[in-house]
Image (cartoon, rainbow, N blue to C red; front, side, top):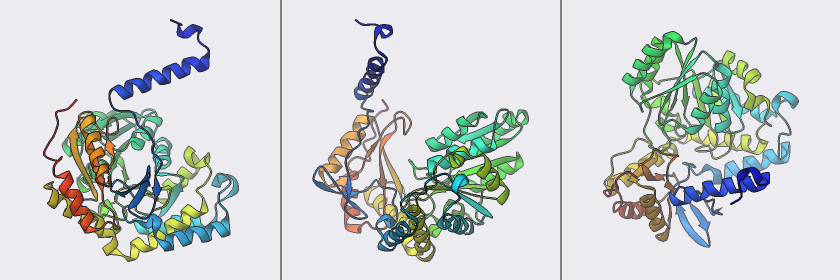
Length: 397
């Protein structure tokens, strides 16, 4: 057998990749990207079959809204297909400044920065504000990009138990005295479980320990509290000093943002590497988000519909009532989730199996999401099928 030392570099690289792929295949954890042609807001075509899409994050169907499409087309005709460079090199097209001002007003902050994606936004924020000698505490089920940004910061990164305020405070009591600065990171709506962070209690703890809070509200804006987002699910609203979100889910476009104070945003405009060293978002994406924001701000019923449909589904399927348009059906093993997804596909539904490491080991699941464009009859039919899987919780792998 040829040793790695005697193999050409390209061959050893391929051997390594093939070995890793084989291991993933054995554990049923290999991913494959399937060609998918969107037909409308809720129907897609895969391998010649039309499927009802129940796993998209386009919660309001706005990526297919004619006014949103028209706004993107007009922006392309006026500003071109791309931004050409970083905003710090060539400046920004006017729509970017308009969107930032609109988002700041919408979120109740003084300023806003738009990034190329939500992932880039979270890669930018913690490293620009934190460093060696600082402490970051992050909910154990927070999105992967929050973890990635925290790790890039060079701060000490520790997790706290999911939505466990007592555990969070205990860790701050233990670790905060040794840290120069502290930050708490959490989702507003957790992307795989659909539950809300306990923001009022979390922000109170943060204030007691002088910890800055970053809330990722990617799955809250447009669908929680009449579209205002997870902070407004509480009375009074629980407004974090760092409010991050995306343009790519309920707003039907592409990009991410941070809403914060003017001083914080100005600092990030200078120090946030994913802003400084990345080409600005395309004009079409910004114009589409502006028009989508118009619709969110004026159509409360549309914004409330996805969560209402999720509750209808859960009542019919015998599942606990949800608080967002995200409903997890936890089946345990990867094989159980893949089998359930395959059976739903045969019945005409696209519901992707979610497996580790996206979710913790032993919690593979169907992640079902609801759109304002879904029909009640389709939801009732899906509920009847899912009800057969929901009670059968397999043992963890």
